[in-house]
Length: 181
Image (cartoon, rainbow, N blue to C red; front, side, top):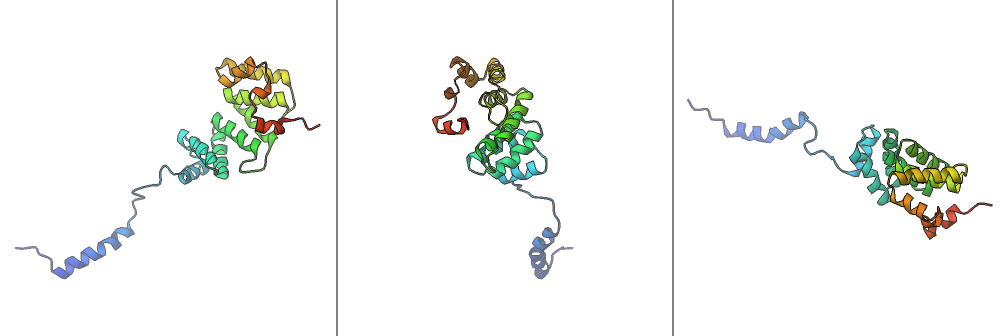
């Protein structure tokens, strides 16, 4: 006995199969896994990872400061100290929000307290300059020394220059660190 479908039934099955398939959902077969948008979405959902947190660097370097802030803040809250130092950089320079030296100094302090050498160096600079925090040159030098002891080259360079802040401050930023009185 032959099992042959009439041509009309076969053609109908072929034409209806996409409509039937659309009714069932098995998720995305090709998810948007590595886009910057996905990284912001993941961070917004509290899904932080090294790759999500590192994506903030590309965001800020490409001028997407608001997105970088969102990612870095979530990552900083999750304990990523590099995200804290990036939040400081954004706040110190008014990227994605108004300039806020007080917030920048707090991010540096938080990273320093968690043992991050860059956070220690930046916190030391903040204290030496009195930017965003009370000026305490001696405590700032001690913080720089801690960063240098952990091998941070720029901290060692500052030590070698006798803690002359011009050694690590670009000429273009001199105005920012000048005394206000």
